[in-house]
Amino acid sequence: MVTRVATYTNHTLLSDLALRNAARVTDLQNQASSGYKSRNYAGIADSTQRLLNLETEYSRTEQYLRNTTQGKLRLQSMETAVDSMLTIATEMKSLLIQASSAQQADDVNIRNEADQALQQIANLLNTNLDGRFLFAGGRSEEPAVDIEKIGAPDNYISKLNTSVTSGALLSSLGVTTNGTLQIVSTDVDGNSSTSTVNYNAATDDIDDILDAINNVTTNRAIASLRGLGGEGTTLLNIENVGNGSITITETGGGDFLSKLGMEKMGNPRPDADYYMGDHQIMDLRVDDKYDVSYGILGDNPAFQKLIQGLGIAASTENQDALTVALGFINDAINELPNVQGQIGLDIANVERFEERHQDFKVFAAQAITDIETVDVPLTLAEVSQYTTALQASFISISRAADLSLANYLR
Image 1 (cartoon, helix red, strand yellow):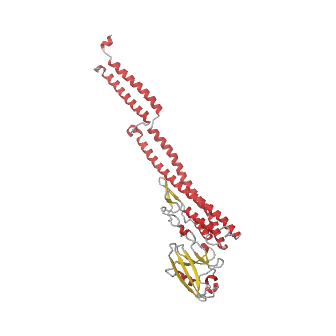
Image 2 (cartoon, one colour; image 1 turned 180 degrees about the horizontal axis):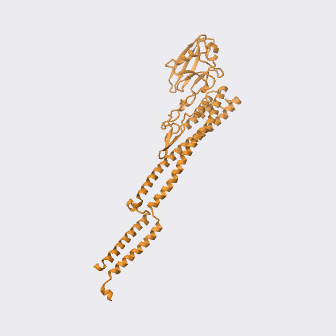
């Protein structure tokens, strides 16, 4: 076919229309087969910036959701652990009441039950999730609790119903005979040390006994005045350093141990010596410029009181001591719900942001889909329309090629 000057304009117009229809048909066919408007940003140039912004926000929201999911799992694990502690404390309270009221500590095997409860508490405080010890604060790579130290230190303690003051003469406490205390202390590794303390019943006072024990640098025993578990009547305590064992005997005919009623039983210190973590409260990034502080530390006062009560109960059947233990456990039962409540508030705070991010994620995902994808059935209908238009263009071009003066005159 020869394009003449007279037909050039029509030919060019029809050819351009046919090419555009062919390109549109190809583009629509690609969209229908892939489901996407374009394989690159150039194909959606008018929406590219909005798409990039949405994709950035979507990725950031997914990270926040991962953070909230992880944080909520940690908090829920801690909540479950504290709930188990409350159950253990309540069961031990019942056993202590039974042992105290009926004087049946041996029958209920209170010492063994308390010791098992202590081990359970230690394991709960060492709750681990994904390699992280949840109650250890910032030192989450190490256990929060040293199981060897969670029990009460091996300890000799004076009569529970008689206060001992620092300046009291031994004679005023009933000591009548001079003598010597032999103290053998053994640490958890089996290393032992022996020290002797000579006393004069008439001239020495309690301060002299404290100094004689505490000033021996090689000694693994320490002496102090404090109540059972750090509370109550002030008593004389002679205990092992480092949670090992201690044995005190008397030589030379003295009556110090008998007159002061020194009895071997566990006596938890008022500090949280068992706690191996730090005091860093963890932060969870849940939104732009917003962190949620969360978590409970293993030295929480409620945990300390529960451990003190169980430590005393695990070391003696003395009724006065069991009453003290029951007091600590009662305090723990009263305080543990507050710990649960704090964890619950942290969970609610995290869930509030989680819900917000989930809502935005749904919105952003739909907006991204609207920009990137096509309605396939509608696109197929457009393909049909443009195919028909393309065929019409080809027919028009073909007929225009047949136009001539001879054909016109015929």
